[in-house]
Image (cartoon, rainbow, N blue to C red):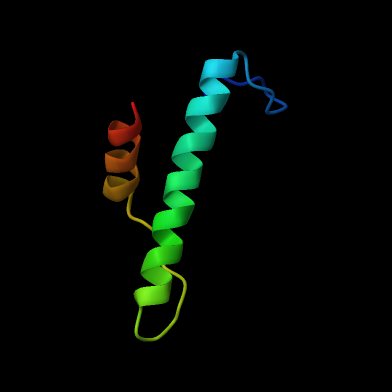
Length: 58
């Protein structure tokens, strides 16, 4: 996190809002894919999928 101090405190509210929005979208998508998974195992998004979510949000 480049917009947070070493102890995890965000430098500005906009950075925190962006982080929380992206993290929430990632969690929602992983939950959706896990529920749709035939074996029911947890799904983790690829770096490319996470980047795509970030680009959609920004």
